[in-house]
Image 1 (cartoon, rainbow, N blue to C red):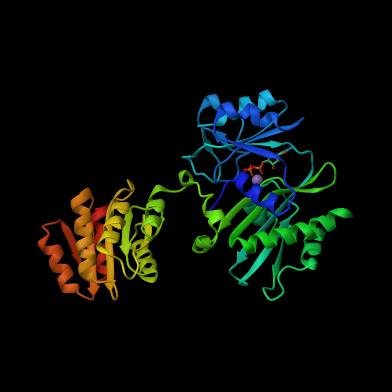
Image 2 (spheres, rainbow, N blue to C red):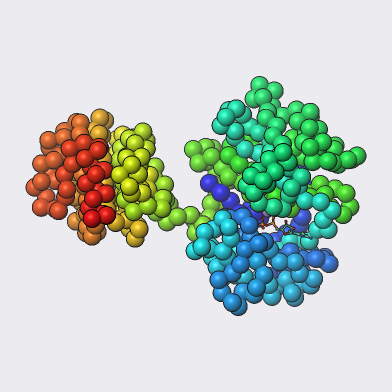
Length: 397
Ligand code: GDP
Ligand code: MN
């Protein structure tokens, strides 16, 4: 789960990390009052969306102005004007994709004088199974590009879980960032704070890009991106309350309400599968036969008819879906429950695309019989290969 920059900065502030003063606004008429609570001479007006690259982005609507989603302004009035131009408009960045994202919140921040911009992130490194700091002098830029073109400028420091964060980690990072004098001490303290916040809140990712040295020579977090482990959210009511559902894929949101493991993808074949391993295999074999999956969906072991119905509705609600493959190996999950769920869903929402069903395992005969007797136009498949071949053929002709 991701949160907005202004929410991340409030968390940083509450842990004592250096961030600028700022106000979030939802309505254009509140922007002037919010900006007026800061002294200037610089006010930064920042679009709040769950995507980076805002500064270099552009708006779809002409009346939003030709600047990106981060605007430096020199008066309260100008700040209010820029906030008004961005609210409700669609910001397109490298990370939003061409559709862009609607800006529903604005953060007005007390502007900083910048000496240098650096990059800092904390993440869970799957290779070392440890929490790692990633630091680079190349701040404020697209870090993927830095990693590709100048990998030597990216420094990684992993933390032994037995010792946790130690001051030497912070000194190593300070050295890699070329910090001097009192900044080294600030860096050691700040990295400790960030590590504590990261572990306290079960984060997956924390990115400060840029981390800056201000013109006064102090460290400050100028941008903040945080991602939290969805499986641990139940332990953090404070974080859960920051969820902004308007930023999430409506299909994934519906799936999470029914506790379905669903991830939307770019392809044309909707998949309903039980078990994560079988779901992966199903996606692979669809690709092998020359098509692309529209989603990952594991309905789980003990799914009810209602859950299967919801899953099927989510798949059919996706306009990209040109065909559906139901691939069930009934173990704990019974084939007749799947069959009833599919039929209930089709009765409710109709079926406008070809549907291939492959059932195997517990109660398979009962399941097949339910589908046969339903009168639905279902293409039956014998095994995984047969199912994949049939759905790709039905879609691609
Ligand atoms: P992003 O484009 O979504 O990553 O948004 P950022 O918050 O990182 O802002 C983009 C860029 O705007 C930064 O890299 C800075 O160069 C600039 N910027 C943001 N805040 C300030 C500020 O307070 N003062 C100055 N001078 N520049 C800023
Ligand atoms: Mn940034």
